[in-house]
Image 1 (tube, rainbow, N blue to C red):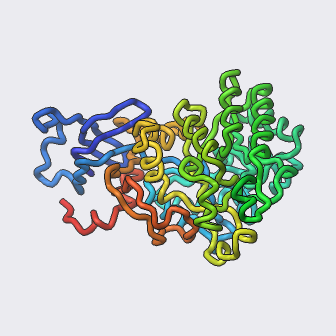
Image 2 (cartoon, helix red, strand yellow):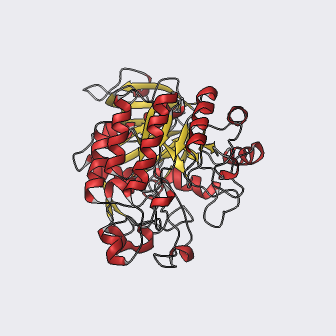
Image 3 (cartoon, rainbow, N blue to C red):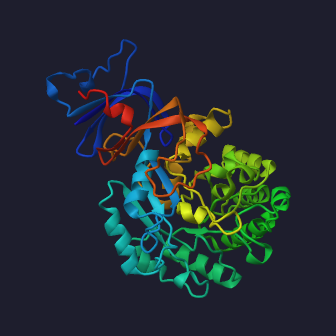
Length: 443
């Protein structure tokens, strides 16, 4: 058994926010006991004597929350493991407080078949966290023919996406929604109209003009978002708008929700914390797809998070090699890593900045992503799975390039953030522990 004592237990699913002790046994939460004014619980956790616990973690001054859930990661496995693999991706997740991730399908080969799906899921079982896999919407991500969603769901796919590429064929997008509705699965869409993008990775605007970079317009995203919101409303499918980046797109999702569409949206930490100006400072390490946009867009995303137009924070963790990112802004691939900094970025730019409560931030990183996919995780409950993160929201740390991920492509390197993960626990096992904790004695 493990005793976690004196922690501030924050569970957005139930609304719990209190100082309490948790006992973990056989991978599940055995008891949750609030601490009384005299410091006791009046229950079993008062008695620490007799060696009943294999380990006691003193979480005083720290938050104990459900293990984080990321519905949008690229682990590059199979086929692109020089960038990342399932084990290094999982190591980055553990360090960031994540116990569940959903991998994207744009690997090599792409995940549009049962064999590749089984490869990822089987390999994921050895990581210590929950590795889930989304399969492609279209065969080969070619945008021409739908996969068999029912068969792939039966084989273990948690959802479907052609992330990295938009589905430009309107009729096919509608057919995909019909199929998804019938199969009872979620479709996640990468929203960009290719004909409106001169070159992806940098917002088309003031900064792109300064840099002589052709750029990607916000209209390219908003046009596709509008299309898919209309289709989802008409067809009754559940869809997720991935890595939303523009003010107009946020407004369209808000309208679709008001009209009754089952439309969800996710925002990435970089889109609510940075603007296109970051490209002038960080170069290719601030090049991403969709790109960082204007201050007005950033503020609109924050407002969308505040009013729950945007329910989910997802990293779009996208590792590339240092060599690839050193090719210059024009030739480097788009994408940054995010698993190891996401909680701190959210805490720094949303909670400490006064935009969201800690409870609401955690909801967008735990129970809301779980709700999107119908997962049982993302909650702290007696008898429930012991998937937890323990972090200090008041600890400042400077981001270095000593990442667990193979990727080093992070624009937050050198920045001081608030909120340090101290422990990650999955299935009742401590799978990550901050170095500072390891040097202290264990009970």
